Image (cartoon, rainbow, N blue to C red):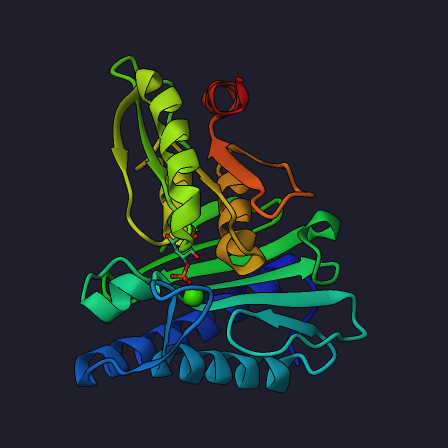
Length: 265
Ligand code: IPD
Ligand code: CA
């Protein structure tokens, strides 16, 4: 049983994310099999998503049997310790299925239940197995890429390198593209990597300057949001009572500029 300190929770998240990522990578090499589609035909789940989540759940419950669990591919369970693990076994599943290396395992520990509005973020790890990069953070102890402390990027005169994502529901694409149009005047360029946790990890590491997306699920941003905050950045969620809350991340001034442009009428 590991201790309750944020650093101990982070170290556990790192160990489990690495083990899970290695399984995902091995399965990828063996060939990916689709298990089902979810909210739309574009929203897929592979057998590896389910197997990797089962591994993570098993490992966490061995170490921390009293904690709750909220994962993308299985039913949530409430614990009685006050801590919940929020897990995306494979974030970037479409990339994973297509053989594009931008996928990751995202594991976070929060104080609170299944509603992100109640969370106090404690620790998180985002591991990209195909790139062998481990991003991690615990509250008050900074954000790290492997052994190196990282920070969000300072203001860039060339404009901001931004990232965004689109949900799987085609009826929402027009609205998301309208947001992109409003933000592009402050952008140097725009990336759409297809893995929200990696977008946030890259903002934390100063590779991207900012990121915005509507409609993320709790497991998409639980670890990444802590990474950005611990790297000195700001993460906000607005419109949380709508089906597609807006998440914006970046250094404070850039965060405010992105948010103002997206919400302008
Ligand atoms: C998706 C990815 C994608 C984002 C979607 C997410 P998944 O997660 O993070 O980049 O645009 O909103 O649902 O389905 O690959 O775990
Ligand atoms: Ca996923």
